[in-house]
Image (cartoon, rainbow, N blue to C red):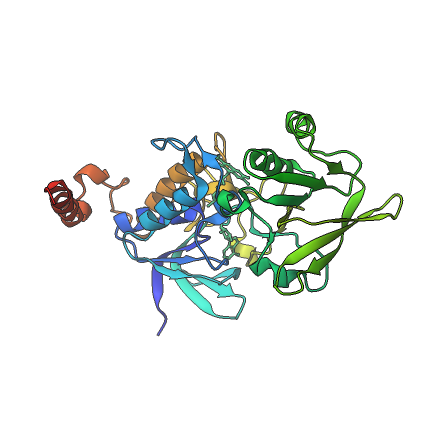
Length: 353
Ligand SMILES: Cc1cc2nc3c(=O)[nH]c(=O)nc-3n(C[C@H](O)[C@H](O)[C@H](O)COP(=O)(O)OP(=O)(O)OC[C@H]3O[C@@H](n4cnc5c(N)ncnc54)[C@H](O)[C@@H]3O)c2cc1C
């Protein structure tokens, strides 16, 4: 027998996670499907960066925001599938059918598309055997700034993300070297100036040619860099190697023709909706970075509003007589028992040891 969900959310970033929370608040049987092995979406690109512009949260590092989003997103115990890519959406009678990369089928009365900018994968070094160093000192993002404390760091890449990291690590690392294959770093001028002012060696027209392993450990001991203009080689002995060559995006989610949602004209990527996040296909909604409408804000703060609107729309699509909005959380019956637990815990914490 088909297990039909009320709402299936594709994508476990901020918009998908908040949709999962709000769908639970509105008593919808909810499934969340995410391609990556983890929830949190593209905040995983900048886990150590401080985020200042989410309402009610003073400066919070990305990894902390992910932790909070996941905790909140799982409040009502939605079904969560990780490592699962939704490849196609079709409709049979009144039921959406989602097909995954393994051919598995998922059935749902409504769908919330929360795929952000698609599936993002860092562009990896195209050197044989490089992947084995990913367990040690080859990085594609900064997961913990302490890791770089007092280390010699080689950064490959010249875009904003690479140079931004170089600037941040200036305060922490013992030494930084930048290699970039182009002529001039395309990053913000002020950041490039900061590196130059600090005397950071920047090798342009250069790229990593080989990684030499430590004789006794499975880590990079030496990096061979080639100047592509002169074909000359130099070696660098970094403790850590950080690669930021940009990202590949996979936008391959497809739809049956009769439910193909309208797209924006400029990029043919964003799903066009009204401000309630309703697409041209009834019962199919889009939220967060995947959606565009007049007044849309492509920020985490905007993703939360989309999630509430999409879930409220889905609720009324399934139950037309349901209230248009969910009850505010401060007076919502769903949280009564949980509030009691929290108060009990707070009193316990207050008691002298
Ligand atoms: C470097 C950087 C810094 C930023 N800083 C800020 C900031 O300071 N403040 C702020 O408000 N915003 C910031 N943003 C933007 C913010 O990260 C996004 O607005 C937010 O992540 C959008 O959330 P989302 O859930 O819509 O999409 P995403 O976070 O992109 O999540 C989408 C998820 O969907 C998954 N997915 C995609 N396709 C499929 C599929 N077919 N099947 C299954 N899963 C799929 C992806 O794997 C991903 O996990 C920043 C962005 C970047 C890149």
